[in-house]
Amino acid sequence: MGEHIVTSFDEDIAAVRAKISQMGGLAEEMLSGALSSLQSRNTDLAQSIIELDKRMDALELEVEEMATHLIVQRQPLAQDLRLVISTLKLASTLERVGDLSKSTARRGMQLASTPPAGVTNSIVRMGRQALDQLTAVLDAWGRSDVEGAIAVWRRDVDVDEAYNSLFREVVTYMMEDPRTISVGSQLLFIAKNLERIGDHATNVAEMIHYVETGQPLVEDRPKGEPAGHEIG
Image (cartoon, rainbow, N blue to C red; front, side, top):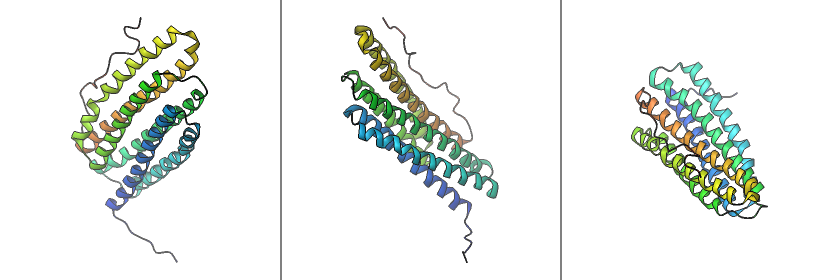
């Protein structure tokens, strides 16, 4: 006969946060691996990253079930409710980061059989910026660190500017040699994936601010110049 274990709200929310921490670690692993496979043209590594997406999807479902149970059973109020709702949003965001990393790995596999493109190094550097943003914001989440979250939010412009510069670099690369258009198009898709991961990191920063203060970040988010500006 199984023993019924009564847990506190704090214990339940700690369990959800631990599951979110697993998702965060997996998201970082997938993005880092996707970038490494792209740079090294390692299709086996890329395939292993693609396969990790199933684990990410399963973790998201676990978080959804745990958070829903918390809402129904505990009926949390105020900051506690904001925290539980934010775990649902964060799980969805991290799952999306996993999808974008999987897409990056898959496109990297397709590029592995093509002549190496020097611009790939620029894309990997941009990806490392997005990874730094993701790591920093997950650390802020773990510490309930509003100031750390705001610092990540303000640095979003760095990834945007890297993307815009990269966009111009890839378009120039394609214009100089039309035979590179197919490869260049794949690189642009990868760069857009990485730019969106940077945006997701910024969204998490906004979640942290709202959970801890009850107020949204009301400043206009800093953005770089739109891609395509001054191409020619």
